[in-house]
Length: 300
Image (cartoon, helix red, strand yellow):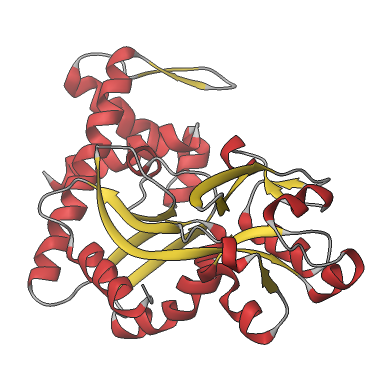
């Protein structure tokens, strides 16, 4: 059986690299050895798995099925061995984590070294991106995302909820004045996130004739960005006013690099931060310990 597993590994490497030669280089075998292994699989099955030409390799329908099922078999074997090792107290393996840029830089990266020290057998693959990850398709074990989540096929654990502030640099406010009430922002350069129209409307709590209501103010400016960290950088550079969560700008507020304005009109809305992972039962120990570590070490 082990010989057949090795053959499956060879076939998968051929498909992934696109040629016998590339697979031979990756596996440190000769191209003729690769060719003989594929021929042996095809002879045993009694059908071709791939059509070879001088330029490319094209799988047959049976070849595509063999590739998909073979890859799953190898993943199952890896999962089996990892599970046995972890059940013996050795929590290890590769952990793939995706996190949005601001929260990753300001909240997760500072505690990663502590996690790796606590679990030295875990190899962490960390991706910082404001693009929403498809956990299953991209092979992501854990994702950390801000905002409201709507996908019902994932498991979610709330990590934090962070108050939002309207902020600007002292330099910007010295040049353009401090807004006194929300509509003053119509005369200011407001920096927004361009990938969502909802970020172009900032909510405020206002008193109209003794009745407190919410005002959703449509702000405008000369710069729209696709991620919060860039938004923060331009606010620090004095380009304009931004609305950002406290987890992102807490140190800037404490040191005075940014100043919170219109606080009396702040509606008190908080940006949720969630840990999401595929609905697997039981949960792999490496995922469980990472999630628990985040909950214990990230301030709510």
